[in-house]
Length: 272
Image (cartoon, rainbow, N blue to C red; front, side, top):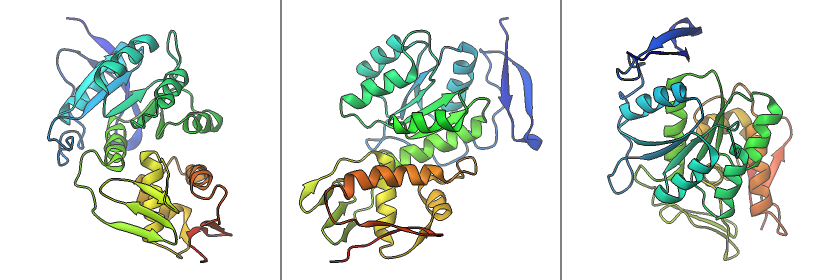
């Protein structure tokens, strides 16, 4: 019987353990896997995931975990295979390693984003420096996790990205207006002065949170908790990064609406 040894982060006392896993028999489920309310596509069909990593033991384990969620998982082990499967299936979410045998993950993401497609992408990689994180997020990724990792946290982050993408839960039918900035919850359209603004899923949810709290000074920690639903490694720099993205799209050539509140965080307001 073919057994592979994989490293796995477990919740028990927060230590990393090495366990023997038979790919034919799923490992014991961590508490979260398969226990939360199911998430499905808006048409009721299963979530489609593209998992890209050249470590087969890892992809076997992650695929098992995502199957517990009822999701359909396509696996690619190199860049060319990833692009081919992405074009063929148009997944709902992508889990992408950076270090691959041919094209790296950044090149794959660049090709995806160049088409105007905003499918949520989570980088899952051994590159763990702040510079690597910022590079990945700046390239257009929606989230960034480093190896070794917890399966529970991976599933939680993917569920959060899917919620923010608006693919899996009933959409709020609210229309938010602040000055000449308008956000439509159902269509997910954003306009300013009648001009359409294209946002990624994370940018949209960040803007929606700001617009739900106009003229209120919001701390970085509060924004992180409400929009990302977790602490990003204790760093709030991801909030600053996405605020800068929003400013380039919302405020470019116009009256600034997103203001920095020194010592606190950010505020969205129109002075008209």
